[in-house]
Length: 116
Image 1: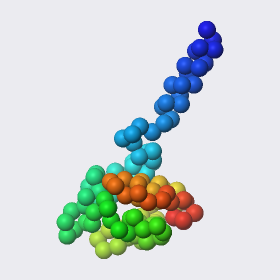
Image 2: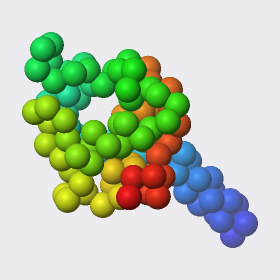
Image 3: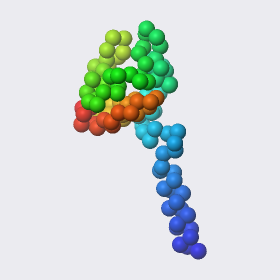
Image 4: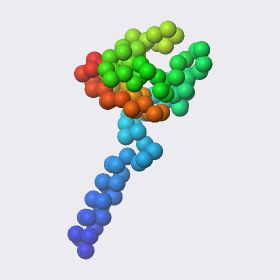
């Protein structure tokens, strides 16, 4: 009976750690995005015409090298503020990774070393 309980607990714990098909698998990046970015770029990444560019399908976001996207988040661009002083390299990596993997974007993850 004890083995059954242990096996059941392991299965429950493992399933709780597995992202659902609707999850990005990057909850930290998602939280940072919704806190700092979604009011301008919208929750679905569509942006606002002629004001804030869409992130969904954005060629800069989808570049093989994430350097430009990281730089925009670190230093800002146009009316977008810089987040280099507000977010840690780990947080910048998480949010850029989230953006690069959402809304049909299919780009590589970003590491804190790339974002620092």
